[in-house]
Image (cartoon, rainbow, N blue to C red; front, top):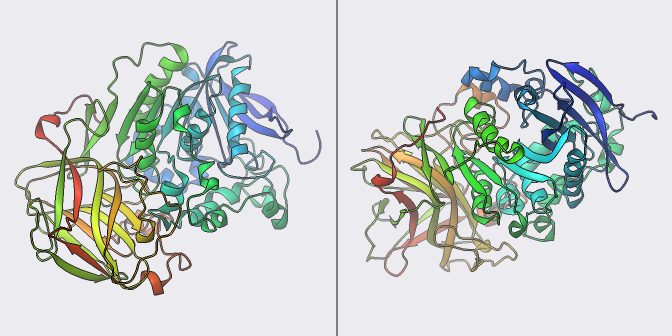
Length: 594
């Protein structure tokens, strides 16, 4: 053992055997480090594996304090049945799995935490590492040869990637709130640069890069350096990592760099439980739905819930669901039979969720309804508009909001949403920020706890007008798919037909409430009072969390700060397409998530 290398050791803890810093050799000579939590008795067990850049030695409650405090305040059940000493961000708690006959393996991905190497997020090499970790785990004496993947966000997204490589011993995956398209969902919404990467990388990734060492945290369990053993200079750390935020900003169009990170769905054949969040409008929800729709496997299921990004993965609801699925595919238990293909927590006002089972996505029997933009009355109308009209707005302002009449009966909107707009700009481009909203009888907007922001609207969509080119083969009327591979600048004053995707949603709107649709030239802004959590949480904002779109290099005011004109009526049928679910489809079945 040379200086600066981690040393493996084994201890007995709370009914588990824990092997710290176990070496996993990669095919190119790099050795990754993993913590292995296993039952104390010898045997061959099912394996749950995760690999990512957040440092396996950093405790959830120390590295993610606001999220931890909100989780235990909202769901006190989380504190039961575990000491929570081994909780990590976005991965399973071994104390809740090992007693049920699982081995939990946590790997620090290349260049992060205790694993040396060049840090290159979601790269081909990192995905190959995950493949090799799966096969390594399957061959250990404590393994039954079946490996499952289960985790949130990063630990969901790389599940899609590695599943497309088809590791022989990968038996099932549970991607919980995970994106699948690095351009459309992670970095460029509708072609507009999202600022999340530049915020996230220095908070959650570079702070635990391998080599931060003495300048970083120590494990509360082992007292070892979380991102060590070595302590490198800033210059050495920079040389040992790709600059993910710059890589994103330098690639404004869809290219091979993004394609290499996107999974090939024709090769995803492993059983999959894809779990999304209605409030994950800016990063994850679309990915979970697209995975379910497009994956080649016949053994696939979709679940969508509410509440915060970090909540239901850890609650009793989520834990029971995960265990029933994984017990079946990793241990041959009869716990996942006759399951509904789609399990939805239907969102109601005031905020509550009622479980319902469906057979497909989009839902069978959906009544696709066009709500036309009545520019003269600022209304949403199901009636076609015979007379053409126009209205313009300042792209730097709050835009225009169109409202339905007060609803005469409860109305469920569940599924993907799209809009067709006819737009002219006084510059060579225009960014459209589209917001689906609900207002109570007093005109106050109804918002919900989103994945990271507590004041999230019903749904959001985006489109840069110069990115309007569609992929005809992949587009549907309810989910336009843009190629994003070239710019098509506007001629100022000329009218262009635009088809925009708005991310999936679910809401039962009560009688007397109104549905609203806002078209604006910048990010949605919640105008109400903010809670303490919203004011203090570093990823919260006024309705869009950290997923803002205000980079001045990407959105110079000379181009995106002008006036935009909407056209509607006559031969320009401008509308928002809503998935209305008939009353007969709304009978609740099964238990809810709370």
